[in-house]
Image (cartoon, rainbow, N blue to C red; front, side, top):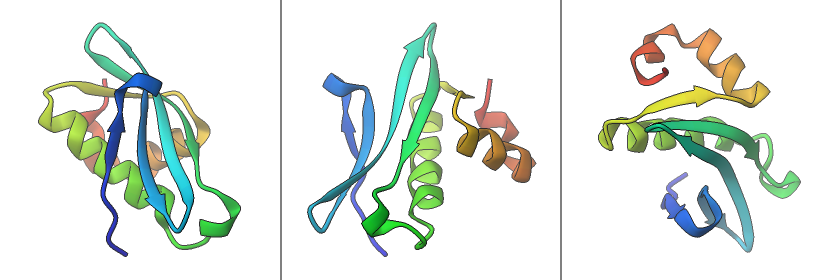
Length: 91
């Protein structure tokens, strides 16, 4: 599945637009850290690994911007626990 990550800065979201649906991660930037607050994947797109793909692309973007991520939603906290190799991206 190939998607284009959209940084919707006005709404503090990173988004994928797929077949008329929007999967997204919301954030709150504080002191150069990106507090990732919610991960939302519409039911119509669920079960395809989209949340993980979206999160991994968002983490790459955060790293590229020389910022750190802070896990504030349960999905991202669990991802961080399962993927200790990503620890350098998290504050």
